[in-house]
Image (cartoon, rainbow, N blue to C red; front, side):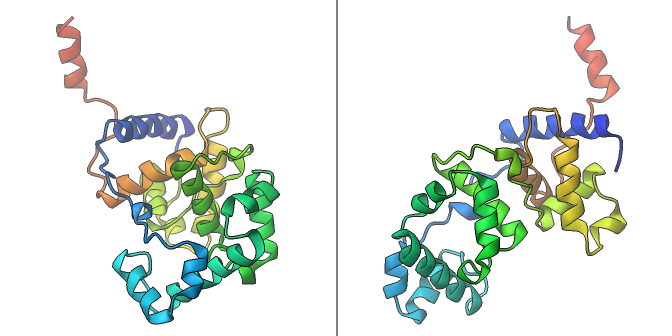
Length: 220
């Protein structure tokens, strides 16, 4: 991993670029909402469900993803009264407890039981609802392709590590260590890193050029 302080400086500039709207992101994949509650999903025939989920681009794999969606909805409908909040209250709004329960009941939580998706789901719950986990530090960064590429761009991963089989684990562990004592948590960085990579790293987050700095001094 590159110099810790240098990476932290770039992270701050990346966050500033995100807050200034320079990374885009007016519409994210998770903004799509097919408006299907768990019970309605269970009552919908497979072909109709497939058509709706494909239309809203939440089923990129037309055969596999609708089946996963239906299984998850059945789990929440039958075990938690169709209300995710019941599940979260049962877990005391603690991310660690949510992840432990899902890991112990993977058959009931297909896809969501994966480390990457589970952490991202917890991130989305906080970003799109009034849900707040008391142990946000236990929501690891969700190391998908874009986050991994951005991590390598910042020097958190080497190019060899990026293409190795342990990239996701390495990225999650290194971001945890890198952000220690910064007041930032890994979940705070997922969207900025994702957008920066998706945009082809077009937003410059390096230090200001010397010429620009000199110009600022002359203007005083």
